[in-house]
Image (cartoon, rainbow, N blue to C red; front, side, top):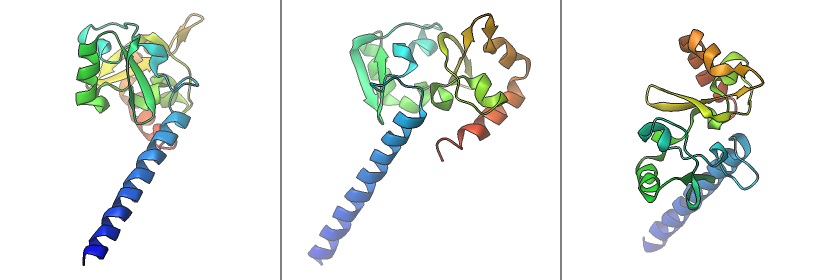
Length: 156
């Protein structure tokens, strides 16, 4: 009986570890991160909610969550993130929410262009006189629904 329990525990540990690694690998591949795995171009994901603005994170105050690295402006923000990372991570892997909704494409963002929608961080492309947040605001309900569907093809 002890051998059966040991085998089951080891099998469970292997499966859990393998799926966690797969999740981290998928996230590093599909999320908007640089070569080192840094998200939001180093901006603090918690500050969008607490400070209501984009704040650059400190490279010395960081954490890795499922393969993605986040920086924070303060130790307090890092602790807040660790209590509920899903609340603070940007939707659609940190890609432009408008592009994900309009065409289902991964488009770079300007981390200073964002909106909190239903308690979730959405980030947008804003360059060369093309602020996609303005377009998003004109048809948010439809674009959000499309973005939710389109993102699933990247993170099955």
